[in-house]
Length: 190
Image (cartoon, rainbow, N blue to C red; front, side, top):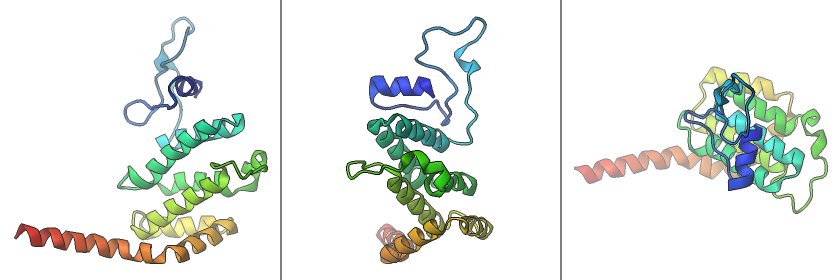
């Protein structure tokens, strides 16, 4: 983590190794004898979890630009880059971070100029859940498992219902619009 933080300080961003891992140290000065940079792998389920750890570092250090970059990388991973979606287990971890009061004790001083506070993280979680449900990236069992899990987080249920109501037209038209585009392309080919 510190290695990627140093990379961020110098470059304004951080990167993962090929395959979305953070296994190689890049910015170290000296390693103990007999060890290589590959001796320090991180135990992560996904690149998304790494971005969450960087987000937490940014929040704890009150390093707004790190919070912003890691939030952007989480949004890319949760909403755009993966056509297969994010696993329910990973989303549950994000629900815990965003909605569990015990996880947010240090972040009680939301300010108007705090543009990447935990409200933005909550919005990201809700958008991710809506994407996975409405684009059918999770099967029925995964959705049922997730719905059972979030019963412990009534604020998430409320936020989800409000977002679903606000964006109902967009959520309904997306699959229909996708089919219409396919039909239009097929019509152009003939």
